[in-house]
Image (cartoon, rainbow, N blue to C red):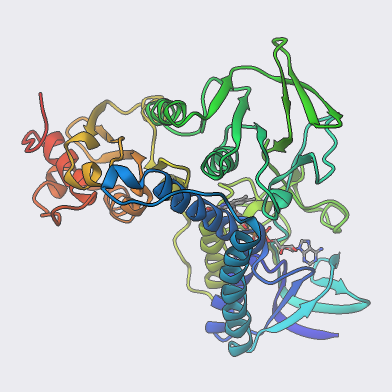
Length: 455
Ligand SMILES: Cc1cc2nc3c(=O)[nH]c(=O)nc-3n(C[C@H](O)[C@H](O)[C@H](O)COP(=O)(O)OP(=O)(O)OC[C@H]3O[C@@H](n4cnc5c(N)ncnc54)[C@H](O)[C@@H]3O)c2cc1C
């Protein structure tokens, strides 16, 4: 039985980031992973979806090339080649990560682990004991009662990653981030796409203005959606599946993607037996990711914080630094950047107008339309940057829609997290012509000195 400073269960974004930082701080670490180092993000999440989205962008560029004076033609998608490109990206990053773990002298154990006491995880009959145990077993794609995922006609994002052909028609059940990204991919690949969402808007956690702009853009792209309506049933048939909604509408499609959210991987892993406080399978933690059991920590999708890879990284690093005695600052989750990488992208940081008002702020808003931005015109994209600010005070939220606006979050998150006021940002000169100029223009306008803005 080996003895460690940290025993980490799960080698995804949360677990491996914790392992790398702890090892860097001189701690003895064992990292236990039953599948592949890198977890959901690298193998079934962020990276493959963004590769598929990029392939879709290339397809759309070919389709629209004549608008830019380029004679090219879109023939078809070659999904074998798309998958080879995507898998090549994953494989390179996977090898890099394996090398990093090795170079930091982290003990890496392959196998399915279980918490068998408050300081011990058992894997393949071997026990690993530590002063600290970090649980990072992540999440899985959920389905709905009565909706049986078969991996062929009714699939989750796990299966959608490996499609060997482009389906003729798809229903995407769920208009959240993952649903909208796949809708965007498949439309670009040439499928007929309809999103079904029970809530009144797509990407409903975003500011309502962003949701409405995405809906407008999707409508323009020919992506169909049904909002505020609930799924009733799905029946498989020879050609695919018939999907019926509670409002009586029905759709015959080749494929149904179930994208109704992700649940924590915590069942049967010994967590409850050790007395760890949980809520609907999620492990409850304090602001330093400590569970109620001293020496047991939890990070990533397993805890009820934002289910994002960079949140997992942040929590993993926080735990490693806390264990090493560095007393790091807790994470301000409002300050975490969020992106939906569809075409167009939706990106935000900070509070929505509704959330800012609910917190009692006296809110002012500023909308800067990308129509006034040179680079946006060059790219032929539409959208906006919306600022939510305290009256005579700091910026409380930044909400963006448009091609590539995710790249503007680097500046947006500094503005929010440093509690900048519009007058702090307005004097900063932004490079011309870039999309980032729109960030400068929005703050100029909010500071009362608009340049390229009407009205
Ligand atoms: C389609 C899709 C797209 C996404 N896109 C983005 C994006 O663009 N940006 C973003 O920030 N986030 C994105 N995410 C979310 C992101 O992937 C997750 O937030 C992140 O992977 C969570 O990290 P984690 O370490 O908590 O869990 P995971 O990455 O799920 O890792 C958990 C690991 O634990 C292992 N494990 C589980 N049980 C055991 C056990 N008993 N023993 C040993 N090992 C075990 C699993 O095999 C897994 O490798 C996306 C997710 C999906 C599904």
